[in-house]
Every structure is written in structure tokens, then in C-alpha cells.
Amino acid sequence: MRTLRPWLIGMMVVFVASCQHKDLCYLHPHTLPVQVDVDWSEFVVEQPTGMTVMAFNTQWPPPYRKTTHDLNQVTFDLPRGEYFFLAFNQSESEFGSFSFRNMDCFETAEVVTATYKSPWYKTKSEEELVAVEPEWLGVDRSGPFVVTDEMIELHAKAMQLNVRGPELAGAITTLMPHNVVYTIYVEVYNINNIYNLRAARASIDQMAEGYLLGLGHANDNHVTHLMENWQSYTYEEDASKGYLTTTFTCFGLPGNHQGTAEENELCLHLLLVDNETVVEHRVHIGDQFEVHQDEHTLSMSLHLKLDLNITLPDVEPVEGGGGGFDATVDDWGDEIEHNVDL
Image 1: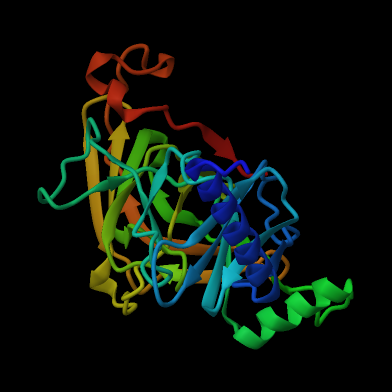
Image 2: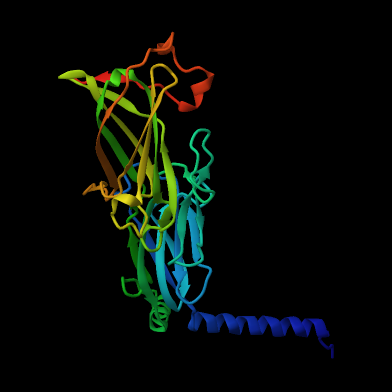
């Protein structure tokens, strides 16, 4: 009688054990399929080409993460536990104006703006950061969502019996991302002798550095935003007077902002037509932000309407002043264009 070789016996033992383990796992599964539906109808600023969806377990990191070009849904196989879900457009590596950090925990997950050194703006301290305007970011979150042993067992029985139904086919949750990047509208009124103005630039300090994705509001850290592209308008009734407007994007006011004037300062620099004289005007504006919310898209904006009543001194225009800047003022950016209101 031929005997089985030891290595063959070992393989048979492993095979039988493996089959038994699979049977046990099938009868006693460890996970529940949870489908996350994502509705982008409220994110109207742009059309995403992909999305990231994350499931955070409150007991342990790291979170479950799926990045896909499918903008409709993803499915996670989740073990027992309590979960929070988070969805945002694109992937974490596709943005250049901000970065993601502390993403292992739902409460600390955030985006923070990129920063740079300006050729003209001198920071007040080494800690002050000049921020890049962020790209559009659509975010939504939900939870807590609890996966229980009973839910897992019920789903397993449904699969064995090939039963379909809302209570037996797993679980579904829905997210509706909306834009969390603010647009800031700034208007500076009552500038006398506006014909003497050649260019403008400005800064606003103490704006939010980033956004807490899981908590749904701006973080408490501060950055400075620069405004280098302005439009100038004159009043129909008096062409010697006018106003300036500009816009920029940011993450809004810090989460701990108290609405007091001293919390934010606007510093406005006005270059006159002699290409030398600069008029500087500083004003505390922390109590003058008006919050606007679009009812359809949930997008937020902040409006600053400042009556500074500035009078520009008369100066002699530089020769050829209408043709742009010379090398000494190149870092001012574009020359102001004067528009007449009709």
C-alpha cells in the first residue's frame, strides 16, 4: 500500500482548514456593505471629474478611503462600529492651492491654503503667512452611522436566501457636497480726485487658513490675503469721484472670529499717476463683513462696503504714463482701468 508523502498531507490539511474557514466566514460574516450615494447638484461652481469618499471609524484610524471617477456612489464593506462619512471633489493630490492634513481623524481632517512670499507685501512678523486663493472645494459629511452585529447577520441571511430589499441588502447613506470656499467682494467708496489714480493693491489680515472638513467650519488659524486686481469706476454726477472693487476667494473668517473691528485690518495702497506717490490707508474692518448665502447652492460670500472718503493729491502724470509701468513698479500688477458709469 502506497503512503502519502508528508508534504501532500500538509497541503490537504491546509485545504480542508481553508474550506472550513470560508464556510464559517460565509455563515458568520464580519462586514456589512454600506453604499454611499453622492449628489453633486448643489455644487454648481464646476463639474467634478472625480471624487473621494471616506468612512471614519470612531474607534481606530486610518479611515476607509475610495477615490473614483464615478460621481454617483461607492460601497464600503464595514465591520461593526460607529462611522462618519466624508465626500469631496477630486482626490487629495489634485489640488495645488491647498493641501490636506490630519486626515486620519474625522474631527481633525482639514484643508489648509498654500502660502507664498509676495514681492511687495512685507509681513508684520515671521509667523504671518500670505495665502494663495483656494480652488473650489465641494464637501459634505454625515454620521454617526452604526454598523451592528445584527445588521451584519441579517445581511448574511438575506444573501443566503437571495432576498433583496432595503432592510436586507446592506445600508445606504447619501451625501450632497456644496462649495465651502468663500468669495470676498470688496468695494471702496468715495475716492476724490480719482483721476490721479494709476494702480491699487491691498491686503486683509487674519482670514482663515483652512477648513475643518469633518466639523464643517473654518479653522482658527490666520493668514493674510492680497488683492492685486482692482476695477475703478467714476460717479455719473461727478467724474472726479469714484470707487474701487475687487474679489478674491478664501476660506472665510476664522472659526473663532468674534466680529470685532480690530480682528481684521485692510491696508490699501494707491499708486498715483506720477508713478511715484503712494497713498496708504489702513482701516479695521472685522465688524463690517456682511455674510450672504445662496439659497440654491448653499455657497457663502462675504461683502465689504467701505466708505473711506479718500482724497488723492494732485500730481503731475509721468510722461507716457498711459502705456504701463516701468521697472520700478512692475510688481504692482495691472494698471487700473477707469470705467464710467452710465
